[in-house]
Length: 383
Image (spheres, rainbow, N blue to C red):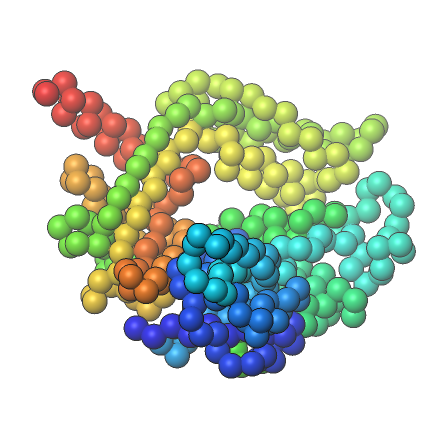
């Protein structure tokens, strides 16, 4: 496997030759959130000169771009007379270009500058479309894409088509992080979004992850399951009591998860003042709250690439795959992140995280985790 590192300008123009003498590269891409990476470099003047604010780092693996984006911490250097020989080491931290998108908020009126936004408290941007993918594309286009104000456009960004992706929905947003608004819309259909460098352009893409549970399988016997951990906890809310509208014209919507059937009823008030339920916005807000409040059935696994199953080739971010745990329990969940590690001493290693270390709220998975907990409990009592 061959890995090449290249520094470019904001406009994606290569600066100098590919970097030489680097070590300890870690580059992790993530589903619907910015990726991150670090690399150690020799602190030669010609290298440090390239590690400047505004520049980007491109990781090329086997001729294809693995990850590309801005330098977040261009330089973090260290040197010691008692350490290694000159010139010392400078560490560079970088992200992928989705971090640029994450740096924006949604304007109520994207066609106006911030100073020209309306002062009315109820001012919001409402988007309704036949496909969730089209809404995500519109949000990005009008806030930081080619359709945005010139001062807000991300250099070299173009938007791929998202026609027909996802179900009909709507969103009402006002000065919230752009990437949060995109996640809100994507969550209903499990859509993914990402940035990909193609030539001298940054393509923003919305896509539909695949169900690969029959072909992408991980287990200890197959040699591609490295570790797993899980947790199980009660819900923090089973009924979201959503209050919308304005003074004198309130709207009340209750959204129930059904988790109280297994646990107990827990109520939570959700303030959505200034928002109506004309297109189901209050219902959507209540449903989204369950992402934090549902029973916490958390499954996190770490896998490794094999010749038969390779991350980024045979499966990708957001795809649903199967994991067979050492207990025999089989669980299906999505690929949350893929990490590339390269070092002179250990070579190259690609690992994937399936599930989430925070929480997974799928009811079926909750039940599967309970089954696993009971099995492990019986194993412990027999010892």
